[in-house]
Every structure is written in C-alpha cells, then in structure tokens.
Image 1 (cartoon, one colour):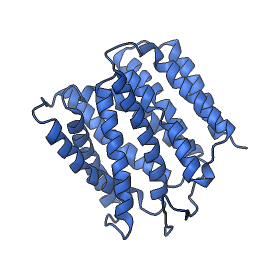
Image 2 (spheres, rainbow, N blue to C red):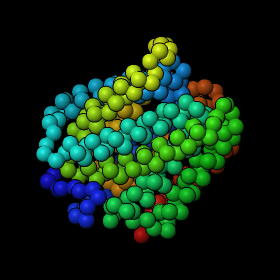
Image 3 (cartoon, rainbow, N blue to C red):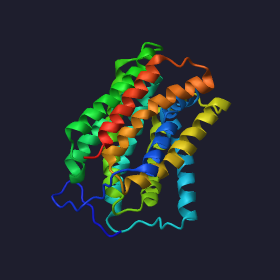
Length: 306
C-alpha cells in the first residue's frame, strides 16, 4: 500500500472506510466483550502495583506477543522514511491516554471509570467527522451514539454510588476517553500507509521507556508485589487486551469505518457486568437487560444502511 497520509495539512488522500459487515461486526463485538474486563483488571492490578508500573509491565507483555506474532508473519518492522514523526505523535497520545486512565481509575470506582472511558465513541465520531471525509456525522449516527451511551449509563448507574470516588478521578478518566477517541482516528489514518503490526510494535516500544522513567521518578518506594490476583490481572491486560485485542482492532481499523466500529464497543460495560454475574455471582439486574436493549438500538441506528 503506497498511499501517503498527512495529518494537519490540506492534502488528504482518500482513506479506506468500508461499511463493517458480518464477520467484522462479530469480531468487533468479541473485542468489545473481552475489553469489558479491562477496567476491573486494572482496578485489581492497582492493589499490588502503582499506576505507571502496572502500565509498564502490561505493555511489556503486549509487546512480546505483538512482536512475536509480527516475526511469525514475517512483517518487516524496520522504520521507513517519514514514519518516525507520525509514530511519535501517536505514541504521545497513547501515553497520555494510559496515564490518565490508570491514574483516574486509582481515584475513582471501576463503575465510574467504565462510564467515563466509554465517552470515547463521541470523541471518535467528532474527530472522524473533521478528518475523514467518508465518516461525516449524520442525524441517525449521532442519535445512535447517544442511545447506545444511555444504555451504558443505565447498566452501570446502580453501582455508581458504591466505593470511594473523587471528582479528580472522574475528570482524569473522561480526559482519557478524549485521548482514546483521538487515538482511534489517528491510528485509522496512519495504518493507511504503515503496516498495523509495525505501527503497534513501534508505538508500544517508544512508550515503554516513558512509563519506566515516570514510575522510577514518582513511584519509587511504593510497595509492589506479584500476587495470584495481580498476576492474573497483568496477564489479562497484557496478553488478552494489549496483545490479541490490539492486534485485531488495529488490523480492522485499516479498512473499516472507525466511527461505525467504535459504537460496537458500547457493549464493553455490558460484558463487564455479565462477567461479574457469571464468575463472581453478582446479581443480573433489570438495568443490564434495559441497557443491552438501548446499546443494541444505538448500534443499529449507527450501522443502518440508507
């Protein structure tokens, strides 16, 4: 693929944004389902690791998996002319998103973190509207995003008052949602000319020293221990999310509409509640069923065809 991609200039070549169908929608829903365990696993990991150390170890695991898979598929990982500045931009967005998410989740509850991080499809749709001509906002798409997010709120609302929280934590996770929406669109633009696997390997590699340095400077002396629960949380965050989910998500972003795919991820908090019911015995409430109906309606509105 020889298309050139320029961000922030008037020269904007066509970006591939096909309608997601069938198997792609099913794959995106699977990723959304798996991502449902991310915020709870971060909360578990933070019991034994400070935020930046947790991010560092998580992405070391992810990098090993993505790098190994890239070598197995014989994908060239060497940088090409002009790629480094764009990768540094994506890395900066990624680092800011992870710092605000992990730190914010430390100061708020898992339920509130789930609510505020899941504003990112709104930001994705806005940035895509500005930068990707084929993904302009329409009335049905905007209405669908609002309906789907209301389903997330209905699902998580009963748990919002449980546990210690702070306005600072909520704001940080909300800012993380903004950075995540921006990262989705910038990734969509960059994978038009940079192989998805090479892009992942480099922005994870470039971000790791930052997490390590920040942890060394700000978290030195804080207690760290590897328990069974934190090891499981790290393996889930690093292997399942930063490994498998990052690989699959970045690959499908190369070809399919970002703003239509991300609305499928409103199913993520629903899967988190469902996981809690299946494995922790939490009650399956009417709010989950109502929320699921609203999310399904929103997904239909965003993806319905003229």
